[in-house]
Image 1 (cartoon, rainbow, N blue to C red):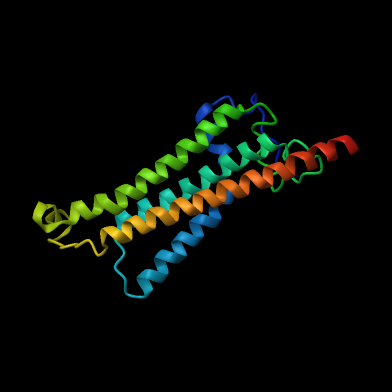
Image 2: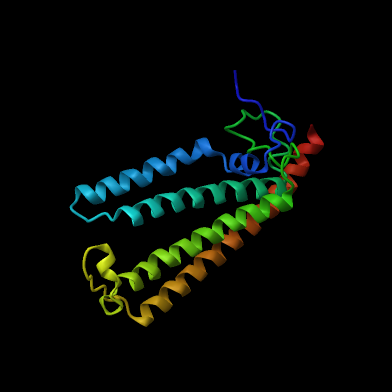
Length: 195
């Protein structure tokens, strides 16, 4: 028997509602991938720090969850989930949280953006926070078993190039989404007219 689509009546607990909106069964792909990556690093002799590994895996899952939520928002915005009448829930047609009134489009958008912002902040913390934490000049390295001198192996020009490249990638992604949306909306309208 296939799982039932979500309804507001079946999900009165808001924490459970938001958790299920992330489509947890599909997060297993990210979990397994991250664990394989850590196992490969460890097997190759690269030291794996348990706290950093746990935080990395946790926020890889949060990133995937945020993308799932934002995907539902944008599919609702452009109408693709609404016209998917031959869906095979939960594999096609999105989570159905918006279409079934479990979450509003606004709630979904805010939740998705919040998850992505949390991932960005965690990335900054992992990148710079651990760097500062382990600096021998701060004396905090003793907390992890000894001073570790972590020099910054990157020049300012390289950081600037990374920011510029990231900006270009984001601009291309936005342009692609805009073009795709301009193609999908008329197609969805045409399909609705044919039904």
